[in-house]
Length: 301
Image (cartoon, rainbow, N blue to C red; front, top):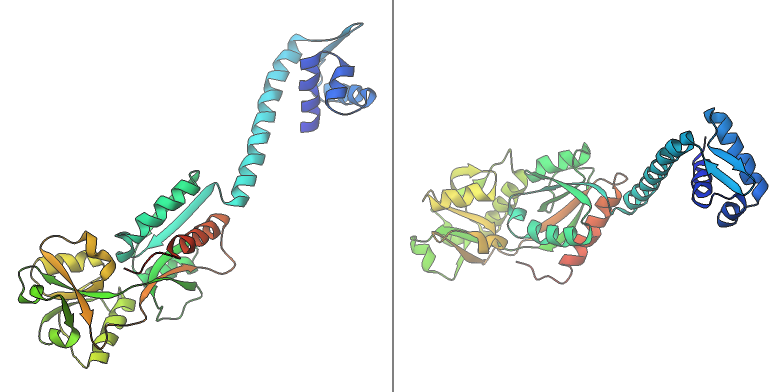
C-alpha cells in the first residue's frame, strides 16, 4: 500500500466517479481503476461498490477512508517538518553563553532570533568559556557566546562577534567612585577580585595580561567565576574588579563602573561565537548568520 493509492482512493471517494477522479489526478482512467482494485486486494476488502452511474463507498470503505485522510495529513506534516528542519525554521538550538553575555548580548540576539524563527525550541546553557568550548567539542551545545580571544587549544571555530572594553567596578562609597576614568596603575594596592584561574582561565589570563602591560601586580583577595558573583563581591565591599563595560546598565546603585584608561586598557577583547566545524545544524547556521547580522552595525559596549 502506497500513499499514492490512498490519495487516489480519497479522490475517488470525493468524486464517486472514476473518470472525474482520473481527470483531477491527471491520469488515465484505466490505471486508476487498476490501482484501486489492487488496493482493495491488498486490504482484503471492497472499498467501493461499482454502479452503472459511478461508484459508492461501502461501509468498510467509509471507515478506511477516514484513516486514509488522516494518514495523508500526517504524511504532509512529515514532509513539512522535514523541509522546515532542513531550512532551520524548526528544530532545536542549544545555545551556550558566559555570564557577561547574559546581560545584554543574549537578550538582544534571542529577541531577534525568536522573531525570525518562532518555531525553533531553544535550550540555554550558562557556563565559563572553557566549559562551553568543551561542550561544543562534545556536541552537547550547538553554538556558544564566549570570551574572545580564546587562549587555549580547541577544535571549535571561534569568530569575533563584537569588541568590548574593560571597566573597573568599584563600590559606590569608594573614593575611587568619584573618578570618571581610572588606570590600572591607580589600582595598585587595592584589594582585587579576579576570575578563577581554573574555572574561568580565559578572563583570568586577559586580566593578568592587562596588569602586566601596565606594570602593576594586582593584590588579589578573592576569585570568582561569573560576572554576577564579581559584582556581588564588589557590592559587598570585598574589593574592585575588571569587568566588561557592557554590563553597565545592569549593575546595582551600590556599584559604579569607571572607564579604564592607560596601559592595558585597550586589549583585543570581545565576545566570540563558537561552533564545531562540520557539525553545524541548520538552526545553528541560522543563529550564527543572524548574530553577525544583528551585531554588524551595533556599537561596541
